[in-house]
Image (cartoon, rainbow, N blue to C red):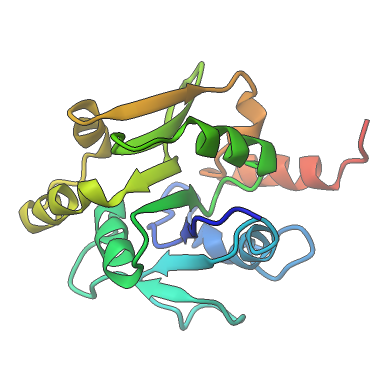
Length: 194
C-alpha cells in the first residue's frame, strides 16, 4: 500500500457529459465515485474525495468539501485538500479516469523527490494535471489563485518545479468527458481480458 494519501477530485461541473459524471454507475457500483473510492482504498492507506457536497453520494467516505461560495474549480479542491490534510504531498486523481492503476501510481511516486512542487503524468496527447503528486509548497499559490479567481492549472505548473512523467499508454489516462467516452469505458471495463 502507498503511504501518501490520495484525493479523488469529484467536484467538477460535468458540463460536457450533461450530468454529474461522478454519479454515473460503473464497474458494478452505483456511481463512478464509489467505484474509484473502493479501488483506491486498496492501493492507498488514506483516500478522500474532494467535492462541493457529500450529500449526493450514497456511500461512506472521507469527504473534503470545497468552499460553498467558490464556483467549480480544481483550485478550490487543492486549497481545501491541504487545509484538511497534514501531509506535505498528496496524490490526486480525477474521478473520471477509472483506468489509472497501481503501475501508473508507482511510477509517479518513484519519480517524486524533495525540491519538486509536483509530479504530473504526461502522455503523447498532453498533460494530465489531475493525475499526479502535489506538494504543500504550492498551497500559497493556490490560495492566491483562488482569491483572484484564476483557475489556470497549466499556468501555475509552467512556473514551478514540476517533473513530468511520460507514459505511452493513452488508454490508462482516458477521461470520461462525453457520453460516448462513458459508453466506451463501460464496454472496455466489461470486455473479457485478451
